[in-house]
Length: 288
Image 1 (cartoon, rainbow, N blue to C red):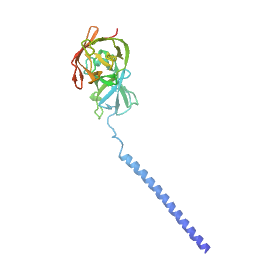
Image 2 (image 1 turned 90 degrees about the vertical axis):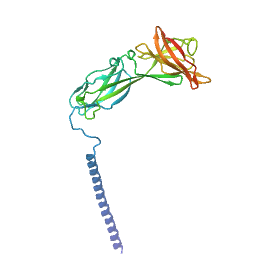
Image 3 (image 1 turned 30 degrees about the horizontal axis):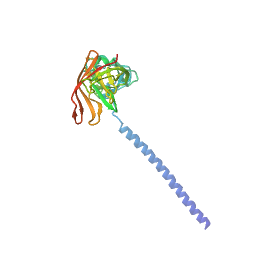
Image 4 (image 1 turned 180 degrees about the horizontal axis):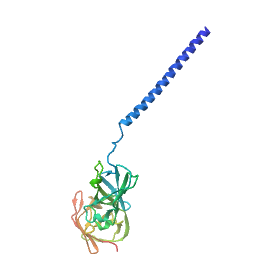
């Protein structure tokens, strides 16, 4: 009986080993099949469309670009359909603003080096104080105010160099958030304006452009204005005072210009939510 029991136990162990062996073989076959299916799927479904046409065709990577002017240059990416050989491409720049094409210039032609499929159109930024931006935007920041300039332009790739994507034009919005530095004490003649007397606030100037900030002239908010290249003055609506009864007072300038040593702001209204205190004139003399 002992020998028979031992033989039955041995038989059961052998059967388990055979089943285990078969399962390993099946498992290996399943892994191999999965790898094969993965390879077939990868071959049948590439991630992107493959281009096998004419080499050295060029396009922009985007039709619109917003760029912050930081270090005197603007970079817009451009790519080509191959990477063999050196490829120079003429890229003209167009701008509607007066004098903008003299301030924003491209070192032409733009050249893709051998082995390079992507590069940047580098736009050099000149003296911004000689031109008027298309937009002068201000936003409140507590008692302070942030100011920014915007210059739209378009760069183009000639049709004969274009790739099948047809992104041959890039509308660029060059933007600048201005930094200010103090330049001294100015004079604010507000006899016909909000304060009804003459005061001497501190004046700050933006780096590289003729934008000026008047520091808390009425004991509350700063405000900014820009002297344009043609002698006119831009001053967007800004909060200048906090009225104890009516809340924030916004100065709305209808026109401005430089008259001799003075910046003259014609105010259409000092307004609050409840209405207007009427208009006036603010005259500012900058520090020497």
